[in-house]
Image 1 (cartoon, rainbow, N blue to C red):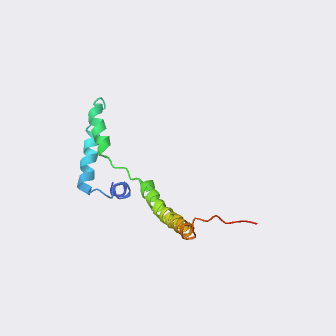
Image 2 (image 1 turned 120 degrees about the vertical axis):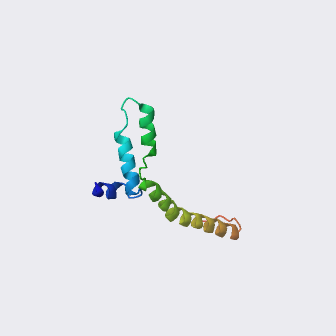
Image 3 (image 1 turned 45 degrees about the vertical axis):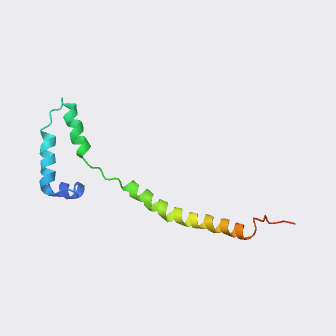
Length: 85
């Protein structure tokens, strides 16, 4: 059971893991309220949330700086539009 614990429940202590596993096995299948409470207590890791945050920082900040620089350059040039001949 230690390998299962280390792979999937590394954020819990061994005692807390054993307590939750015992609580899961003691649930009456007909009692859905008790089942919902146990399911709500289980934490499922969400790596895509942190990936999305990192991607937003990695792409958002440079794009914001680029847009700010382009608008500043346009403002300093007197809001002029290039004349093409």
